[in-house]
Image 1: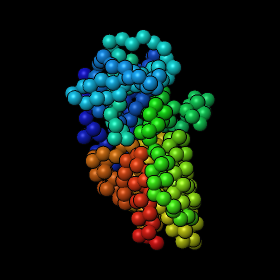
Image 2 (image 1 turned 60 degrees about the vertical axis):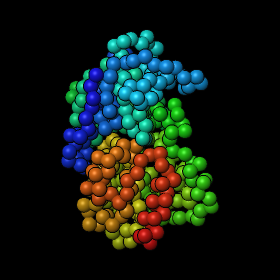
Image 3 (image 1 turned 120 degrees about the vertical axis):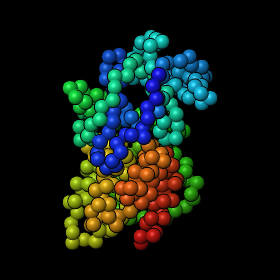
Image 4 (image 1 turned 120 degrees about the horizontal axis):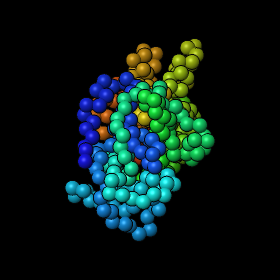
Length: 305
């Protein structure tokens, strides 16, 4: 139906902007980061798969690529008959292609991350909620869904795996202060648990880039910087301030520029790598490669200290 080209999106990096694709399910407005979307097509026949998650419709094969289809209305608890007018939003993140069934696609809005707010727990469903943010798009309030969390629930084997750390064998303890910006409650806990398992015990978790940046600026100047922050890890997609904006601010500030900074995101692609390099990121890698993240942390901290 329509292919989404990301080449022209947000040409200037670090502007703290996002393009949101709005879609509807049962007349409710939801949103997804355009950077996750590859194309939108009319729904197609799907081959069911045995023993799949209840929200997994099955698979289909457009242009020689087998893609899993997730019935997003069913996942969200909306019981409604499928129709030929339904659409598939084909996404690519965490190095996977997944199609999500939706009812309609409304359009695309470019907004600032400051216009996206963390939902109240009564809206998001508490600590296990699937709403990662509420966006003000013109006069509409749009619920931004946590697609990484949805996929992690449907297919746990595709997300961060503590077994990768176990394979590394015995490791020493490090008290180097690591600051981490990650808005997904589920992934934040997974990352924290894995890094603790890897021996990194002094972790400071922030739910977005703004919180981390404010805390950086509040650090006392009479103490050695690396004793307070030895390394920063940041996601890209976050309310209030995204990881690219955070990277630009950190690497443009003479005081904080020496701090090694890793971008750890499901959105890493060649285009995103170019953006990250332009902004000064020391390393970039895709979720869910937690073992690779630990290797890079070991290298950067060993190099620094």
